[in-house]
Image 1: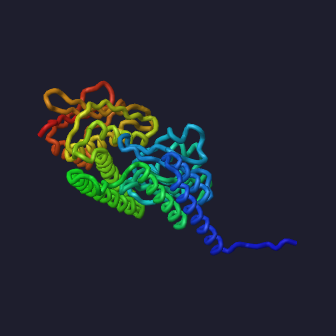
Image 2: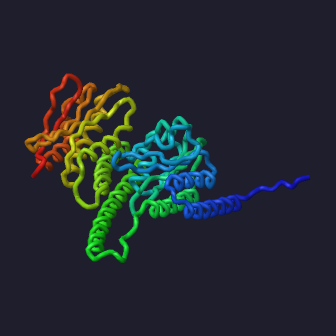
Image 3: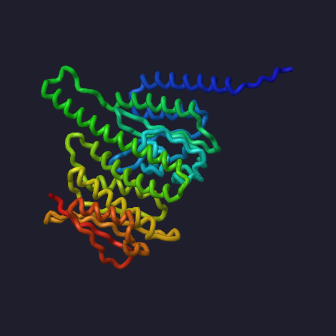
Length: 390
């Protein structure tokens, strides 16, 4: 009769580690033979699924110009998901937190975790546990590699190490395919000087972004450790504001030759970041295009972040649906008008002593502007008027 064998926990762990090593080795070999970015991304998803033994995997690419993460590759998803579905890039989004903190992110019970939003695409596929790791290309977080389980599962350190190694290998392969290379030694002296200047600017931007990611990572850690609901709420407010600054850095990195930001692109990305926080409430934009220095654009973005967040919280009680509209107009006289309007029940007068109200007033002063309540038939409208040139 057959002999029954049992595998010890140590043997099981060793077998898993051997499998992880084989998956990484296979992916490295296949990545070297592939020149197509889409194929590279899909290979990473396949190897992640095979290595961890899971049905759903995906790669999401960060789109700074849209303020979101779009699924560009995946295994186990229904038709119409890969290449089309986008997720928010804020801290309440599982892949968004991995993007913003540049750290792996483990979620054991996603439907019941108050820290995270349960995205419809994950709910539709019954995903309950997830592991996200950042994909870094040339020092910037390019996107996120994620594995999703439709049965309760805790991803351990070995899983995190394997998926991080796979994401790092993918990042290195993408770097060469996307043409992110240094300047050739044979270039002319002027070209080398220009390249050196751009490299120094890029290094400063990387350090600034890394500092923001470190700050967000520390704040997230403190929020998780705190048992005081009020402290958690305050830390969440701080994280929202730091995220708004991070979105501005994303826009700055789109053009490494200037310190200017296209305000409409920044506000559009910021609103896209906020748009998935509340089902049934749409955020619309009507934005004139104007470039301004980073130091002036950030306060305006923080103003929009505060006003839109406040409208999401107070203007649509008891599940009411509606619309928030963000407008920016560039008047011929050199004055900008930035308005946030909603068609909800109204937010009421500013609360004395409110940190959000005080912050908005200080930010308005910082750009040399003035704050005014907009007249409208329904809901609340708040406008900021400020000089475009100082």
